Image (cartoon, rainbow, N blue to C red; front, side, top):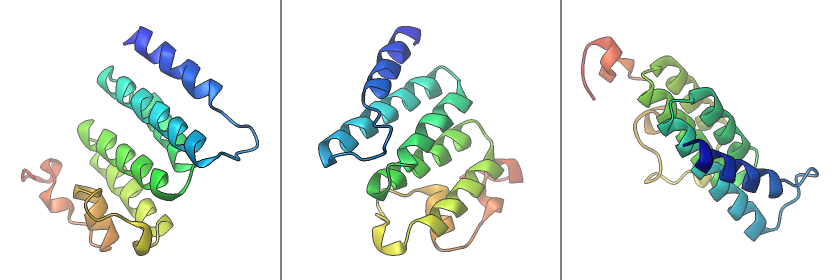
Length: 130
């Protein structure tokens, strides 16, 4: 994982625009690099680094932000940090107007948050499986 992370970190650094202004293609490329990097970190059990990569995706805005929020929810859920997953899902629901949310892209906590219903009883830490 270390070699893959290093390559992707270099790509993320090279794709950074300090002014935050990206063409559509540069924005999409950066999102791909960040998403892949976050996945490598998740596979290597580096949750904090994965969350940071997803946060950078969120800062790109639009549809990419939705994917960043979804990545954070998934990472926290996989780590069994359900309260953090729920918090991020709630943030996503508030930050992303319903017209920009792709209902197919959101699962679990994201759908629950979008409807403003948090059903934590359905999560394993509350005694039932999903």
